[in-house]
Length: 285
Image: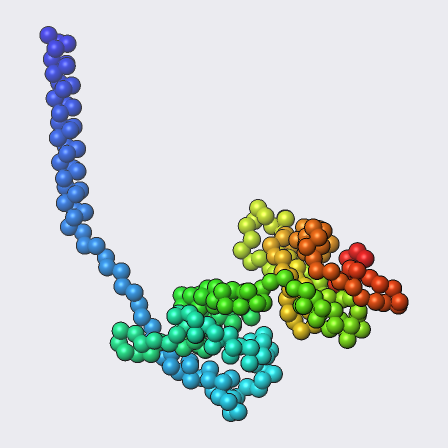
């Protein structure tokens, strides 16, 4: 009898536990359902974007009455004004993002000039996206969107003409240009520069930093005298010197595989068949 009564008591306790758990769950559900859900409100900042557009026009684009000179424009925009206007006109013509439109309230949005200036400022100075807010009156998210659309538009609009390898006609023009500068057979200058990687992972710092310096990423570029960049190779660790980068670069792949245009030029009554790049002392002859 004692064993039977013990089993009954255990069964009663289990049923009571189940009832109590169900009751607690119901109370908890009622509390959760009664709790009001906080509504997320997006704050709006009136930036007076028309004022930013007016100031930008007066500073650089007001014909002969601009506050800043063409030389100042060249230094701050990293290009001459004519080239910048050409880029702005091309992007505005072919990409809806850069076309000025009215919003739902009938208010004009940002013009292409303002958007492209924001993108150029971020590229030229390497600043964060919200640094153009005080001058151009663009929020951080809008500035980032301008930057992304600007780079994509440049590739689509000018990639076939400017982001390519030199043709035979281009190569002859480079040879003529080099000869006028006193370097017959020279088709450009090659060098590497280091870009600081601010957010480099700690585990990779030893691979991308030299000694106690900051982590950097190497950019190898070939440019002609008119600043036309014919080759760019980016992404190698900053611990590599220029010669190590050249060993990993695809710069001479066309030459090694027989696809490079043929070159012939005369120096000191000697015919040469290979062009060369102007470099510093680390590169091999």
